[in-house]
Image (tube, rainbow, N blue to C red):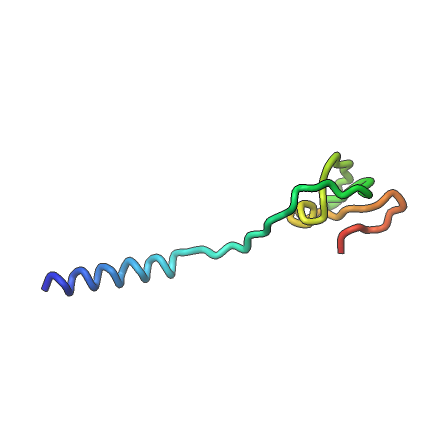
Length: 74
């Protein structure tokens, strides 16, 4: 009888773990500055970052641009 309770409890905990876990896609961004960035846009806001790269910008929903207005990250 004791083994049945342990088995049921283990199965219940396993189900709670599998159903309750949230999967998140992680992205590791390298830590370097993109040298050709003149400005970036985040929505309708124009910013002039001192040090950022494509991975960091796209993770925030932003776009990087060169001085001539051409996009850096695609």
